[in-house]
Length: 159
Image (cartoon, rainbow, N blue to C red; front, side):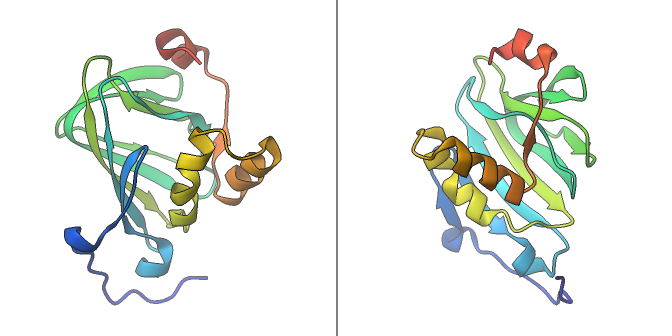
């Protein structure tokens, strides 16, 4: 359910952070009346951000603040640098990670918003292998993250 947005202010010093990956949770659907969600993500050199997946309910936009981002969009892998901006529509497969030998600092928005802060809080446990396959499948369905196969991404980055 959406509510009318009046305003949302998130001071850097007060932003919730998640480690592994380094993620700043800036705005979620509950903060913006469902208009958008936003976060900042820093990836160490060559680090994976997300495996190939699609979202059915929202678009996702990536703005490269610094570094180099290697990104799959549909069936093509691109390298984006500082100032580049990519919008991925619902249903379009995508994956991303810091380019080999480079870090990446990103500002990511999701519109319309899906409350994904709970998902982002779970990521360290998912990455550490602490959750069952059934829990991971349920979580991904709940937060509209649907993994897909991509030979182009696998050929480029493995796995």
